[in-house]
Length: 123
Image (cartoon, rainbow, N blue to C red; front, side, top):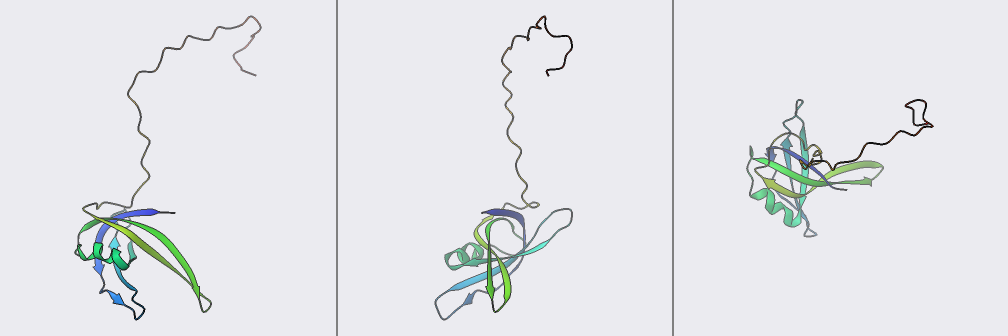
């Protein structure tokens, strides 16, 4: 399942390199909601290049997945950023309302009442 969040970059951490060849870079964005939240994301491998192009204070749209794991009886959750788009600031992403067509409605003839109907109820 994929999620997205808009905000401004508050902090970009240094890249962490591991002996296995794995590398990652963490960053924090601040949402611009009524009650702003600081949310930490992790970009791994090639995706760290997207963060390198950004600076603190830049407005971004972050697309991410939630990753969870257990280690030594403790449970951890990471927000794995897989796309960071610059210039997309604002509040947290809200679902978009469906588009409403402005086309006129088709003409529908009125329903004729039958002789059996004594009231308006359909049952």
